[in-house]
Image (cartoon, rainbow over all chains, first blue to last red; front, side, top):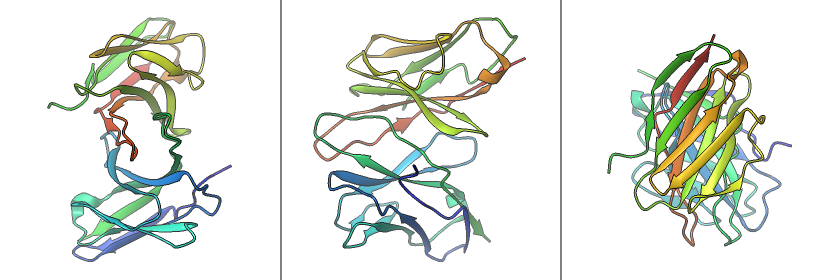
Length: 113
Length: 115
């Protein structure tokens, strides 16, 4: 069963904000939302993660709805280098240690010049 | 830090040959992960280690696959004998686990082609 649902692809104009949605309606209380991206021919790259509060770092902002059933990754000023596949991953955090990532199909974001 | 280092970057071999992929994690990280990416199956976790000890190898496809981590700075993924369906990009990642979660750092990958 898929834990997250993302659109297959999205376009965004260069310089505009890119808003990538993710549905995770079955998320549990101890699960975090992580976002990674994979630029063509490179390894995945961590972007951001959060539990229930909105988060912001130098790369992006993560907005999680109050019921935690969905979230949006925001790239505030998209550039051509942001063209990549973006993965939304729901991951438990039990305190016992890390585990592997389960990647879905992600969203292929294409930034148009 | 140079990041996660993987070698070789590309490997072409013939069916039946032994293949060894290598990974050097980021210094100080306590977790090491091996993933495989194919067009058909996407990114899949194969195995991961904590403090050099294998924790979960349920993703290893067959007995032909084995992974070791003899010390904190080196890990290998071996396929013996290799088959054409093993052709994929193999990624190694490392992380330092903390109370607020962890960020996995991925290497550039090894592109394996088995003829």
